[in-house]
Picture: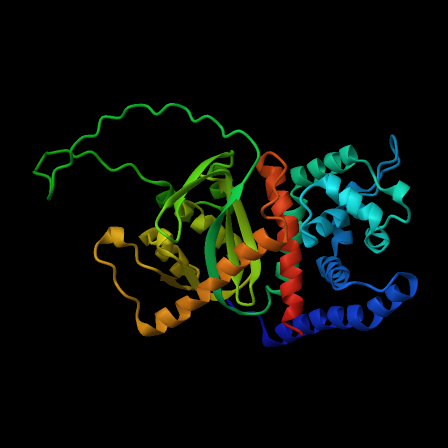
Length: 377
């Protein structure tokens, strides 16, 4: 995989700087002439929607002149981004917040309180956005335009539990399999041995991203993990698998069932990230310690640095240079915490994988834009 030309990198960074400069020195002064003085949170919201360039993704949702004229979908997308930026738990609370806040309401596109749609209209629009994967499209375009051309040092890969308010799917009862005891050593002449069944990790490197994503379970179920203190914790919902680069910028995400092991999403996530950015190192914890994952990372031209899993015998210590680089993996933990604490990750009130993913993506859009601008400050 070739690196982008240096001149192209400079041009893209110049584009990002010009957007930041236009917002700071043109857009903010103009807004403060027609609105009340902007709060810091309102300034953050403006930066996010400007960098996300949401308007260019709204064409499929515009009214085509047939049937009853629908509510402005652009204003509603902006409102959902505001919901993430302000960490508002519910759509009902968002509507109340918009009615009380003149500045934010007008920034979204509604002049008066009576212009704000009902909660059911918001719900229908959100379902439409979720069906089309709008949040993922906006985020992918942002990453490829503003982070893609710049060589990234480290990709930090990790997952986080997403609690949901829905019933877990019932799993089909497992069929009893008779395990045949495998003999050690080489088989005798003419002796047949039972071959090991290939696992998902064995198939993934030879399949496309779309095939791998279709193979991952996405229904709500029960997940279990061991926390930092060594205790098992469980939750009902999903698991968000996330790749982040230096600067705490999330670049790609996959949502799966809560019970899916982290390693099962590593290769699809690497495929998605490789289509957006160029990086040098892949940093992963011991849950990803599998030869298939290491080999795939190497085929992408990356250096995999994965914490050894004790289950493979005595734990091997990393070389000092790799151990030093591995410290950058805290990026993944910071992004996960930021999403949950500040951008709606703890307030999942929708049901179904598509809607949950869209809810989380609005938060990731806000984080991505905010972190990109912080690199320029």
